[in-house]
Length: 325
Image (cartoon, rainbow, N blue to C red; front, side, top):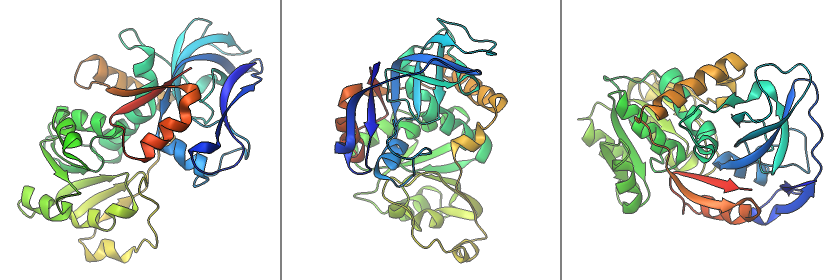
């Protein structure tokens, strides 16, 4: 028996309960991991509230990201053995001291990257990778806007986009977060509480607008994000921290300059083990090179998951957070 956080009914942070659970031996194609660190992500709150339904219904163990040590290997698994350090992003179930997971859903953690950094970077870092390198291929000619620039994905994306030579604009909700964004690749930072981000983007770009807007905020930044784009620009809506967008009007894309819109998710981009390996390898490479630093700004005990959710939803966190079993 091990300890885990379980959800028996959807709701606020108080529904996260600390319990003992039984973890089975790994079946064919599976491994058992002892977690050393677990990543905290906004998507965890979507499952907790029921905005996203848990794949196997209630009760469930939340969490989409973790790192640790392989403690058992199921039949037919090659390339992994007991003692290997591994990390993953998905499937759900990481808020546990140990878990069983399909072997093709994990990657080995290379030397030079510690377990907490691995746990903090897998979902957020691979999200930054697919956004900047696949959804829209960012380069020196790119001008982009990234909402929630001081968040976990935002701080990684700002450094990475600046490393790629882009002009990087970010929005934040406080001057403290603005300073953090500036220190992490953002050449221009807009405080949306005191400034109109659409007007400021037009000023910064000389009226031209951005090539791409990365938007994980949702309701509060729509349709303003569309007004920040140049004709034929791309709006990548990859989250909804302020609430889901209601009544999306496809006609606005035509009215505002024949815009493109996409609602990507990491799990499509890493659907095969080959794609997972490629995406993670690119991330590990840019981190090991020193171009991107993974900032773990909050640490919580796993049993204190409810407080971590309160602070995350209350916009009190910056960068990445980890839960430690």
